[in-house]
Image (cartoon, rainbow, N blue to C red; front, top):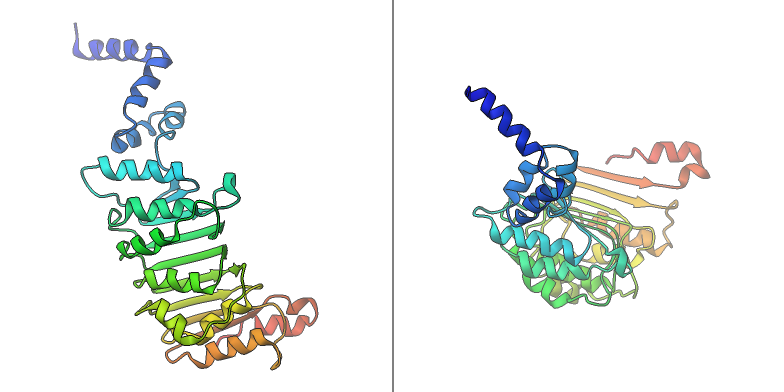
Length: 288
């Protein structure tokens, strides 16, 4: 029989296999990430089946929304012959547990030192102080992610600024920090000496974004520590026109006065245009 004809016959025979057999084959490959990545290119049904065993993500980023996601990523990291090339990890609060970041402690414990190309860590829509959160494990193992350069905190609730200080102290390699809609459950205005002790020797930022409408104590924190002192680019968001008597703006002013190497300082007044349209149009593009 002609070779091409034989191959065509074999292909028809293979394609005629019951779907359950294909699913069993893909299920058997759940420990082989490379094979699963090939499966997702075959067709839509194969893609859907293979993705049951692949970490959720987009491109070089992996999304972690629960402990199950962390366990799956950890399993792949262990069975691969070469390290994972994950460059970004987005940790979302677990919606099934009230937005808890408890799985962050599992991530830090299980994957510390296993992601040598990781550069970006995002914490999104969650609460730090929640049942199951093992903060000591996070602070102990996060230094193992020494390649992280970019930290994004978006809609995150910390117990207090001391927790934020310990988080930054554990990620000394961070050079870009975005704090957007970060808040605390307990407002604390600690002395600079205590905050510096928690921060240790780092990080030293080159880019900093601070936009926290509920964060007077967050503003105080960054006003009294020097992590942003030598930033080249700083962006500060405010939600009203500043007055000299307003505590929040005083903290921002302290932060600004402590910037020694800034080349671009952008101050955004978010709601000014609703009262003073002509002012809002002008200050939103302020660059000093």
